[in-house]
Image (cartoon, rainbow, N blue to C red; front, side):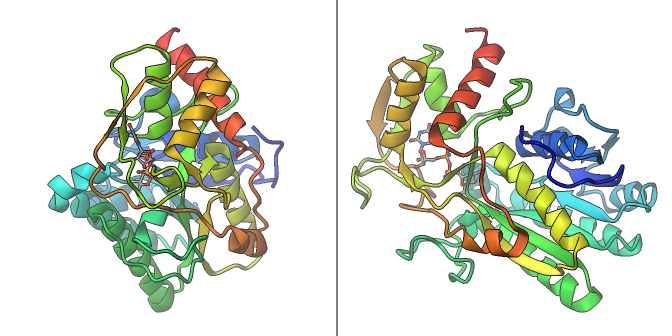
Length: 336
Ligand code: UFG
């Protein structure tokens, strides 16, 4: 974890989805910077054991009355970080209504509750998946947004809703378009724990540890140097750090921004597998198979705007640190 970056002076901050992978790292960093994270979660994807740095409120954003009541009980709070959402791309294709209900209806209720309680500042987790297939790499925030997946479409709908709240009611916001969150806190006590786990790095580590079957590599016929998909992997503590920088910038008068959160570097699936073999000293057994539905060929960020608007630069995102911290976390969790 980095040294404190901004004194939050005992301030309470609502973190919706604070029991999740990114949420827990954000909460820890809020606490390390002198604030108190108030976690709103229903543990549909998050974990009770990951809520350690402040109070917990059991709330499901799909329940409008409950959401408004939870905000009324915390009407002194000025800033909200909204990270709760369905994220599994394949599930969105199979159950679009469930995705829209959880992500978009949840966001509508959250925004209504914020307006009712005059809570003015929102930091929202969007995704690079809102851009869609394009050759224009690195991706600028001004790139056309034409999402391919239901997941990306729900996130884009929420981006638009937030922009409309800014225009209609003066809501201040920072929307972060995350690239690939990865790695774990150096303490080893929080990390990536999705169920089912669909992400590359934990799946490749599991195969390296000899747990379960070989990793499936989805697609070797993409238009990239080695035929596998290219992504921009950013350490979860850099994502957390960016949230603190966003609060600082909003305190200084920033009213609205859409910002990529990536490193600007793209790595292919095969490059990640090779790096995992180097860091762990273990082979990653894999079977190369067909493409996974919904995957885009290449996604990596132009990261300049986050630096110029909120002063954020990644500090933890070398590939080696990402893999080493993820490996430390998973080794402890798996007892290997
Ligand atoms: N991959 C494999 N095998 C696996 C898992 C992943 O080959 O077992 C490949 C994927 O096909 C992709 C790359 O590794 O090419 C990265 O896949 P991830 O699932 O780790 O990450 P994504 O880029 O698909 O996902 C990211 C976020 C998701 C978000 C998605 C939207 O982590 O939360 O972007 O595009 F939904």
